[in-house]
Length: 483
Length: 117
Image (cartoon, rainbow over all chains, first blue to last red; front, side, top):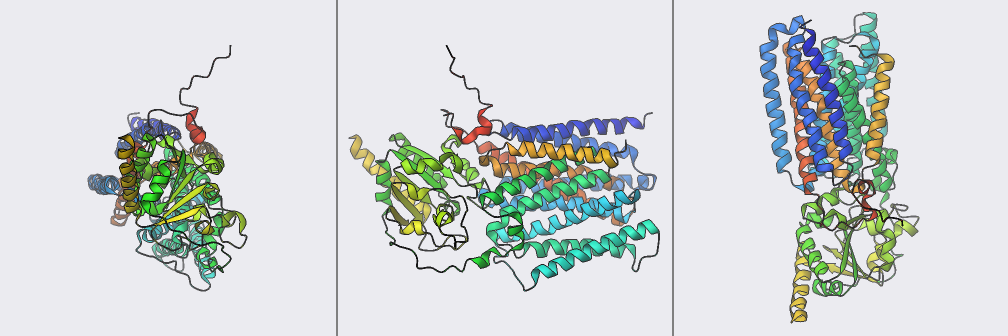
């Protein structure tokens, strides 16, 4: 009877944890309740981890003698893994957030893979279904681990160009096929009790090796611009792997939390791919960067430049201004100065709003976070579908560090690689100012006809320096006007 | 308690449905914190790692179990740290105009509808 109590507590805490994690995510659906949402989920995680130490009362006979060592190992692993990740998570710059999420995600996939490895090496699975689920979880977890690491390397700039070799897709298919064959062979051997062609441990290592190789090969050819979609897919993968291993370990909390994230991740991936006007298979299996050999010359008009101060003054005397920020703003660390400028405009009675494209930044919603970090209240930030009709009635649009998301050829030019992508209709405003570092192409390397339009002026320079110029011009104006 | 066959499929189906519905109502402005938040949620894998490590009986198993807990703890702690940090940054300017940008959020906001007389 006594031996049942710890398991009962674990089960009860598991239910509570699953509820708290789900409720926490639920609260994250609004900026008002989101900060408490993550704390609710955190409490769920904490009680679940503490309660799982009750497993010491039910360890298998074989593991009993090792219990003190195992407990010490568990403490050390929790302290090192948790401590390092906590420290890095507190320190990381907001611009580096996508690669940080990729790393944490890869860790989760690796953990799921390691759990599967233990089940396999110890031959613990009961029956063919459990063995199959273990292998499937192992495969997905291992792909997620190695793929996430490649995604991290690409976003961090360690690997800066997509690596493509001829026949890449055939090689990927072969590696996948080998992985599956090894997996099925393991199932066959365990089920039939026959002697395998090589030691079982070797087979299991081969299985994990092939799965991780597949993750690497699958991620290498994908360009940096598509990495957010890839991270989102691997996020869903890790969720699925965790859910499957939860079934193997007979832990409902893992099953629920894992599958929850699996489904959420798939939906998020689809939303992101839609915002980029790409299908998910298009992201994964075509070489986007190659399409961008577009013939140029059909562009009418010329580039006109304006000084930062003049553009700033024009906005001061406008009645409505919309700001379209892009990653270039964050790269130049210009958010603080931009918001300072916006506050000046607002105090002068100008109606200022921010228009954020779904794929602005290196990760959907990253621009929102970067603006929030600079102190911009979220009720000034509008999403594409809510503000796009207002551009036509707006006096001045300030495009800063963004390019492809305001490229009108996405609407009109069928030969453009971004044709069909929803864009912000900045070109419809009465006047557009584009702040850019220099005459170059955007992240995707596509020419932008907006820059050559009659109602558009370019302000060249570092985003932060340009913002300082605008602030000074408006300040100088304000003093004389007030006097 | 054993969960097998169809019971497992029921659990998976309901959890998947819940995930789909919960994420479907998150406004785009929160997509990054949401991604790291859901990333944090699958950090629950650390519990499976703890179970595996405590039941380890060979050196190889102890090594793998150690890695499982190490990585799982990193997933959970790191995911929490970055999500909490990001969400703490979101603030309003005080005068909240009830505009459409936060459709999903606005129904929670207490707005007094004009009384029909």
